[in-house]
Image 1 (cartoon, helix red, strand yellow):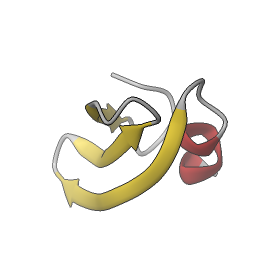
Image 2: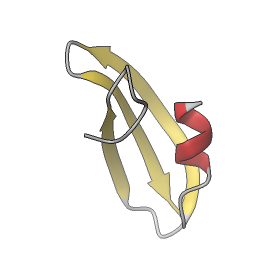
Image 3: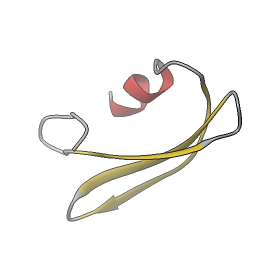
Length: 49
């Protein structure tokens, strides 16, 4: 569900890494203009922190 949200973001190109910590899921992805983006998602709500 979280990865689907990331894939629907504007300018999304590909997911590089998904990590887990006590803060939640951290998704690292790249955009079509080659910018690196890291977003941490709450594991309970699935929303970005």
